[in-house]
Length: 118
Figure 1: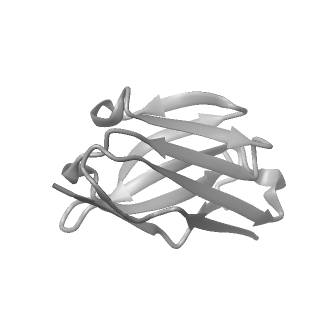
Figure 2: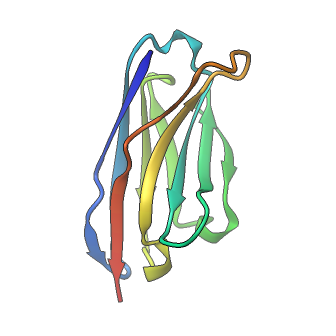
């Protein structure tokens, strides 16, 4: 089992910055990749950014140039640096950990709220 704990969500004004953190604990040996998703009210959960072995594999177009995903110790800690935040970035942000060769290795954090005021 893997536990993911996110932190760093807050209320911030448009144009501000936040850094989200996600710490993985437990048996992390199955994890190949980690990612950040977000879900705004009334909308489906969407993939924001993903990283594998320290290399960024995906960033959604709407945050390109503003958000940066990074990792520490590859499989245990992942960050999302968010700059020039916009009201449309308001959502619950979720950390995800995935084992690409093990379908049972898929875990979610509890989510952290990011609210951007105009």
